[in-house]
Amino acid sequence: MLGPELLSLDQVAQIFTEVLGRPVKHIRLAEDERVKFFQEKSGLIASTAAFMTWLEVRTASGGEEHTSDTVEKYTGIKPKGLREWVEEHKKVFE
Image 1 (cartoon, rainbow, N blue to C red):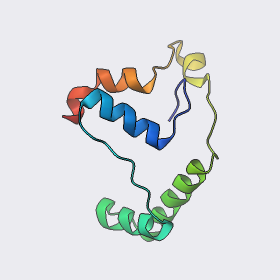
Image 2 (cartoon, helix red, strand yellow):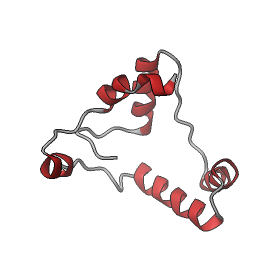
Image 3 (cartoon, helix red, strand yellow):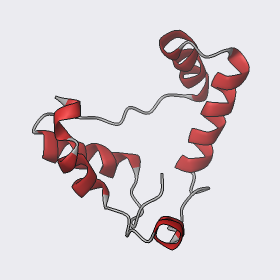
């Protein structure tokens, strides 16, 4: 996700918790459990579930740890921080 800040998934969960006023937790699963989750809960085929798991593992190990000016560069609009975005879309999560 593009934005002006680098956040861990635990930090994302904390922001949701604070804005929504209810607990939101980031639950870590082993790779095989994550693949199974994607297949059973999201209905993904095995290869897609494995790819999504690979992306999450890569991200969790810092593989996507960077910010970008792409949104502002191409739209002329400064990207919002996650907290501001969650506050604006709070009703969606209620």
